[in-house]
View 1 (cartoon, one colour):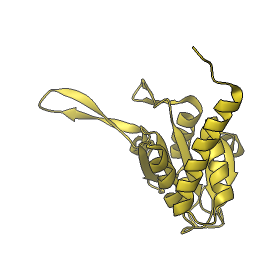
View 2: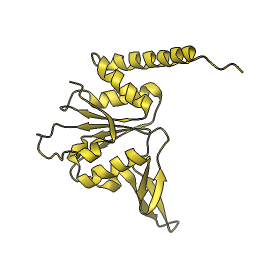
View 3: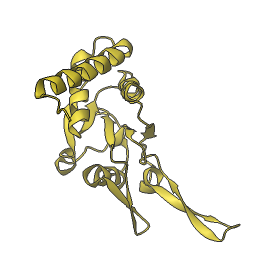
Length: 182
């Protein structure tokens, strides 16, 4: 069995990267540096925090990355009234079967866009950030594992916007990268 040389593995990885960047670049004109950094975070297993004003293409970028790699994508809009169970999931009683059935929340995906994370309460932010750090969530006393490939792109409005809660520094370390699309 031939083991590929490091040069051929590098060439293959670079080819995949170039195709991904070109595909995403068709949707995100002029954001080559941001796309390069996002792909680096994706490849390294880190999560990304995009800080920018509404309308700069953050959602479009997240969708383009997911489509380009064939990953399952979900979006969770963080609002002041969002509860941890809204993103994690909840058990619903099935009267016919007389049992509880777990209904998974949007966090059970491969690429999650946590839109406007700083609009949600610190308790809801913590639920997401725990999942990012541990790759699992605890719901109703039961631990549920997330997909092995779990990538979060969280967006944050500038903190001078009304109704925002700044992310504490202890939670900021969950993100490998923090950038702005501009």
